[in-house]
Image 1 (spheres, rainbow, N blue to C red):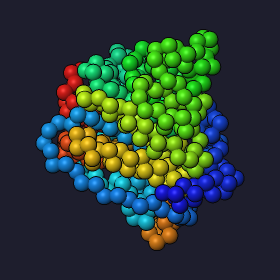
Image 2 (cartoon, rainbow, N blue to C red):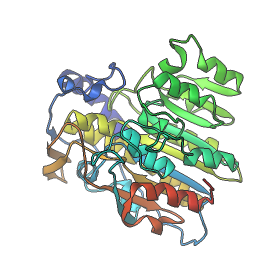
Image 3 (spheres, rainbow, N blue to C red):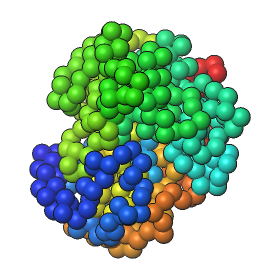
Length: 392
């Protein structure tokens, strides 16, 4: 791990000059603008990390905990590019139950992240741009709310702004995903235990003058601003902000997603009732929009390391189901060259946008067998709810 982390630091200088870091300071949706695109098809390879093998429990009991891990925009090519870069192995190989999710929304064959996450969080297809509402704009309960109502602890981790579409889908009910300040305000209406991600700007530098971070403190949350402080948290409710908007992309971000995931699990597992946690590898999507293969590879590797952290807990706990999937595929990525010995990958792209292709679903732990074959994206939410015995 140390060698891999040092390698990431060395890459920062090289990628900074090629445009990989170009969207770091942009507003929440500007990474999608074609003028920000900096096409790079080659990941040259580099050091790799060791992958641990874990054995899934044969328990037939329902899981007490569920960790849903969303690689935003992550299709099979994104996964296999990372597998090639890491000399042929990923933590994802521990997942023996594999299926495919149909990602279309109620309005479009090609979904956006808002409609995609509403399906994964609420079990309902909706129109592109909508969060937590049905096609008639009526609010629909999400799995985090249902878990909270049953007394389970709940949490969100993201490398994007926590108000961005995917994490927001587990909090907000709104028909326009771009209402970031309203989405931030809706966090105050929840009893969520942990959330870690970017987006402090939407809580603190607001048009209405409210300081939602102060209001969070008044509600009993610790509000922290660096991953160094966040990972020291051992008890209580936590709002961890890692950036004013989105985190920087890899490698500039450094080791954030893994310790954020570990911290969330540590805090949420301090209960006998169970927990629900969503972890998003947000910027796989960002770099795929830009068709930057080195970025796609590094973001997917970072996400896989977070999967490894979740697996370590789940394998020892024996009562935790992990589901790894995507809200959609981004870029129409295809691998047209690679080398297991060096980790080199070359790729081509058919798009700078999302595509309609089905995305993989991987499951590990009690109930994993329910996530195989071709399924609707809404089935993922419905089956998680059933396994946790949650009533919509």
